[in-house]
Image 1 (cartoon, rainbow, N blue to C red):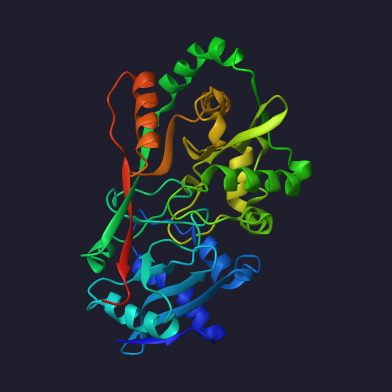
Image 2 (image 1 turned 180 degrees about the horizontal axis):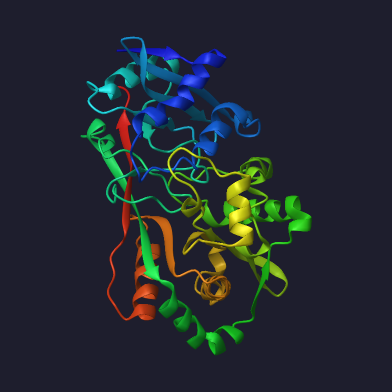
Length: 364
């Protein structure tokens, strides 16, 4: 096997074709997160202001059998990211080949992460279980043999939580009087002021997650680039802002499981958009991001956001929700999520899907 830096349009085409080879015939695969790979690898001018992105192919007998990118972000300087990894099964230790290339390309880096694809807001994690079902939109699907390629590395585990919506909504109804007395108001995204609203989203993100593992500060331009391709799918309902005394203090981002509209390598397109708007066949949704400023985390702001989101989901008719991902080392968030779901459903529940980001040393 040998590594080939991606420099030509033909090589770039081959880079984005690797997942089609890896997942051919796999009914669980969804390619909807490939738009993020394309954004970071070839489209994001804002991210490249503070990060370098180098794409590579791994060739065997002149055929592309794997791909990856090396990303070095000055806002996360201690880690070199081995990102957007995809590979066919049965390769002989591709990690050692990648590490050798990384030492040459980024000699100042001491450690690396596999599975953080530029930023937590882009995509992160390799699937560790549930390989026999499609992922909810926004969560990755990766091949079951990938963890074996990174055996021996330290694993930062993450999880998602899945729950029936009806008892969750009924629980929120019982909390209505408490939330009314909280002094917190919830408003929807104003799409007519989309750029300004996304600037607020970025500001709250940076203030809320600055102590979060692997978080790097974002610019409004980066989030604009991320959201803009999905602007036709984005409704005001999907991004809620919490305010106390007229001051924004948190947000909830949620959306339907758009992966139910597509199969395999097909991207989200006009046909899927029309199906969603005219006769919505989607049955599930994802609570994607919930952020509250540190000084309001012990208030009712979080509950107010979640319950307003639950109300909107109920009106839309979706039946099943999934939240996350949440780092398993983030015990307060894990415990809060489990406690909330158990209060709503009356049943003790365990995380639904598990993911991993792998960490290692370049020099040993």
